[in-house]
Amino acid sequence: MLNFDFYNPTRIIFGKGRIADLAKAVPAGAHVMILYGGGSIKNNGVLDEVHAALRAHKTSEFSGIEPNPSYETLMQAVEQVRNEGCDFLLAVGGGSVIDGAKFIAAAVQFEGDPWAILEKRGANITRALPFGSILTLPATGSEMNSNSVVTRKSLKAKMSFASRLVYPQFSILDPTKTFTLPVRQVGNGVVDAFVHVMEQYLTYPVDAPIQDRFAESILKTLIEEGPKALAEPENYDVRANIMWCATLALNGLIGAGVPHDWATHMVGHELTALFGLDHAQTLAIVLPSMLRVRRDSKREKLLQYAARVWDLHGGDENMRIDVAIDKTQQFFEQMGVKTRLRDYQLGGENIDAIIKQLEDHRLVTLGEQRDVTLAVSREVLEMSI
Ligand code: NZQ
Ligand code: ZN
Image (tube, protein in one colour):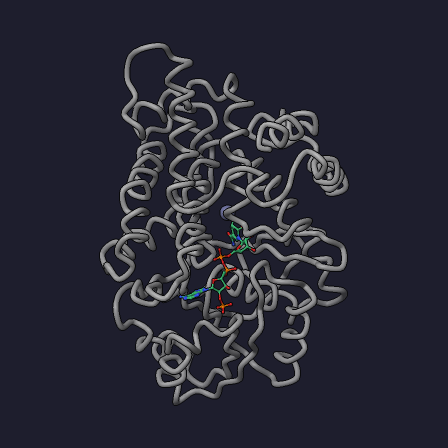
């Protein structure tokens, strides 16, 4: 096992009816800026519940944080938070709103141009406003991690930062609040969580059986529960299981002491920045080819994955690897997330632009072995047409 630090201060408040616990979770006397997206929380009653729970607090609102939150929108929120003197943020929504809150929390107190936070990937943050979240879309794990991804539309740059100063103080996870998710977002969420596990699991063995078995249990649970969420949208237990899977997939636990890949995510971010695809759509396109192209360096883990996650035992090893990757791709399709560039009206003519973005962002050696060069990324994209 590799050396590691594990730190996670986020309190998880899980279950039906838990938004009522907001009043206790938010510091007494705080002036709370409620941050949200395009309005789903107005339609499903979540915003009303938030106001009811915070009736003893002073509150303000900022709405319009879009999917793949933009620097441009978030800077408007920063200005409003400063003008109104809010001292606590509450993100209500999916990963985009929570990531947005992390950036706002850091930018409000930042001296100088806040774009530097993204250029330095968070290393220059010395303080941040405290915040909590109410999660309405299980997918990113942002509710219990210190990462944030922000897009600067004017530069077509989708950049991430991380800092231990931007963990949510608490996150409320009420699975009933996910009943209103559109089918597309249910599929996206399951695929994103699945790929988070793969980025931390499907590398090379370092004798870390507990991390491996945690990872495999999350993958198997997503495979079992994901299709049920599509078939029975109001099945509470299914939603609860998916929600907790997505949080555990990226809260530091399974990634402690093991190598990480993240090449699929890095290539995927460029697809979103250039063409506006949903985050999970990009992962569904890239991951299967990424595994096929890198099957030699990932061979041992691919065989373990084939055996333990897909119950493929015996017979030719190469065949087992092929089938495991095919099954992964079929699972994404089953969740309603298409897995080919052409499914999104993209093709070989777009690949040069993607490679140029990777080069401009200095993403020229990715993956756990740093061997995903631009040539390898190109091969992966060509295989994904
Ligand atoms: O904006 P509203 O109206 O709220 O609608 C949202 C949005 O349109 C809707 N939605 C959310 N909850 C709903 C709902 N609709 C009905 N009922 C509900 N309960 O869903 C749409 C998508 O929301 P978004 O927050 O964009 O989705 P997601 O949670 O997938 O977040 C994606 C963002 O997170 C980043 C991605 O890159 C992307 O920018 N990621 C963040 C990570 C992290 N912080 O660790 C890791 C990930 O790998 C990822 O990169
Ligand atoms: Zn992701």
